[in-house]
Length: 502
Image 1 (tube, rainbow, N blue to C red):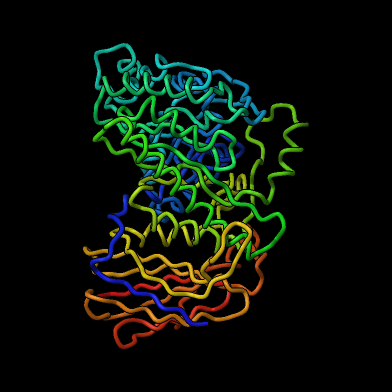
Image 2 (cartoon, rainbow, N blue to C red):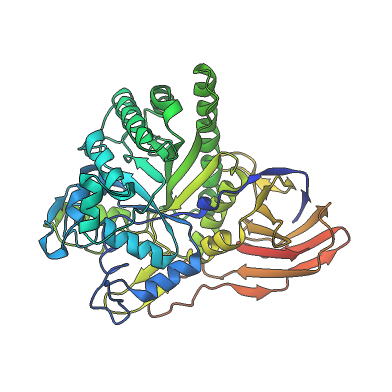
């Protein structure tokens, strides 16, 4: 098969917000306990944080980390996680039918985030609580001193405020499963009043209002319209979530799902434009896609287990072991975000450690990179700069979710400071190699070209603690200079990153 791509210096989408490569940690399963925090682990630092995990997170260079939930946050009392650790209460977490020791709270997470080289994106409970608890939390975290909450923070060991700018106003409040679920009108009113209070404290705060949990919700997209009509001028982002499944092991259909993601983003972008016009506002609201990932490998089994267990602390839960096929999917998802980076400014892979995560740990043992670690790392490290509006002419196929799904999924990023072009390319065809001519116009000549390939003959190949390097990137020779650009050879069902030094 042959395809043609044109990358032109003047055809751009947007400057990418680095927070497009954000992450997420929830008090769920082993994400926190034996994930990032394990005081008895050989690599643990003085605060009980696993240094081996910190090293892997730093390698990902993820700019933000959303915390502490997720469904967990909708019944969470943030005050339970402050003060002496041995005096903190143990609570029942109704979201995941577990017990929460509160050994890790805002102080511990903030210290970990600094060590891991990431900024905090904090979530507020608007399920079981109200704007008063929200404003107290923000004051505790961000006010310099002289008030009850800021002085309590100092008493608890943190003199300077953390100055967190990015706050989520609840989580998935459209979902009947959510503690404190509300109608769109109820939630929109509460979110707006909370936003007004928080902006009264600090106008520079960036606030994320809840959009639909996924695009199959019966209230979608009316939910977005109602919530934004209530809150538009006081919020900065609306959140979207989407998870990807392949229970049927149908690779063609599975790899077509990012077309559904693209429609989801486009629809909500249209709703934002509608509300902005209706309200005669000059304010811009963007999308925070703050939960996304592949999630199906252990989902049904975990639902059965949760129904039977008796409130365990930090059990193994949602620990999907990803395969090579998921590398291709994650690559396509990230490419979609890059191509939609004019409206999707923030995104968070869910989650970071152990729970549907790129990083896995064994309690007391090793930490290793899952297969999906690599496409996320490549996008995070090399996908910063300006997203290019590529012209793509490629063979395509029809799927249940969409017609005309391109066999070539490709995104391009120009980093003017580094003088590089980076292309992330997935060949969705299971049988044929893609020969791609890439015309590079008005960028100058390529001085050097690098091709990094992820390819495995077994779609179900996994990385485990026993075989951590089963699916890894390799240097390849499928990218060459051609007259006016590049000639690419992309093997069937493969992920490629092509780096061009200009």
